[in-house]
Length: 194
Image (tube, rainbow, N blue to C red; front, side, top):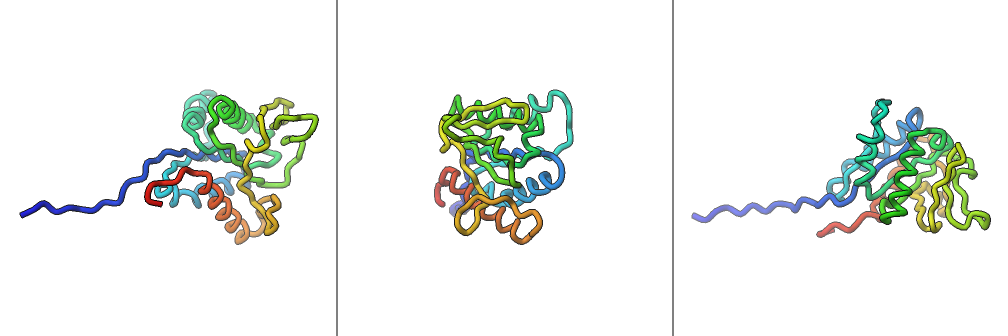
């Protein structure tokens, strides 16, 4: 009697690692968790892992041990932009590390979400600044060589204008998160069989 052959679905190779960077505190932690939870069920089938630091650990070596290890393997770095983001030392460290790594290696993809109306001083592209400048609250800058180095996941209005997340309307916010997850999927490498 012959051996039974079991057909098994191929396990996707997890080649991408998505890091969600945000300012801890309400409403940003809640929004980051919603985005993370929306991505979680599709992460395995689409071949990516997720990192969201939702701990309250304030140890001095936190950046070196947890955050930096995840940033080192990150292929997609998502920033929930708001003025409070720039006021956080941890957020600025994460972004600076991701930008420097991008400058050196071409990864991670730098993906931005406009979480709230933001002071335009923090993100400058103009004749006086021929390269992209991400400016933090202390005046420090990380240089990007092209505007195309920045990719906004959204949210966008029906005319494809960048708008802020609609924090007051839970249904619209859920729609915006879904739209941004679709845009993220377009930046991921194609999986075999998909």
